[in-house]
Amino acid sequence: MKQKKKFLQVYLITALIFGFISLADNAFIFLSNTFNSTFAFLDSTNRIYTLVLAILSFLFFFFNLTSLVVFKHQRVEKIAYVLPLYHLLNNVLFVGIGLILNILNTVSNAVWMGVIIAGIICSLFEIGFSSYLLKRFNSPPEVSL
Image 1 (tube, rainbow, N blue to C red):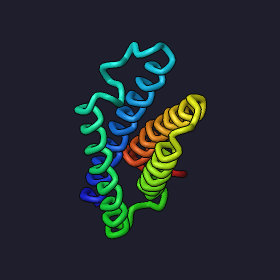
Image 2 (cartoon, rainbow, N blue to C red):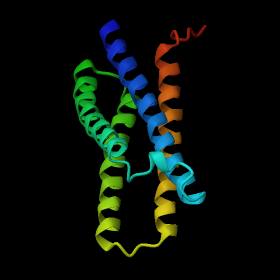
Image 3 (cartoon, rainbow, N blue to C red):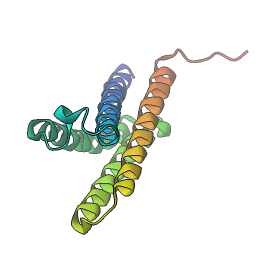
């Protein structure tokens, strides 16, 4: 039982950290587009920054796949499956949208801003749901009388 909770805690903390990274990334892109490159040092043209985020996203994608298998093996409550499934679907969806928008290359700035705002909303969901699950699985079970 303790091993089950430990992996789940590690996963949820990692998801929470990744949610904050995603939120910061989307916020920096939004702010740099809104205020004409105030945050240009973190713009997507910075190769090191882009490479680090790409590697982290790639690793997190496979961590989510692994987490689903571990959760199934450890018979974790079904609600714990929501976050890894969400991350996998979210990654596939946003990568697909990004590829399509890059291929079209005629997409307006408003569409890109919509994608960035959707990313911010998704990041806030990740942070909120990860926090909720951390609280739920770390609190002692309630005793009913």
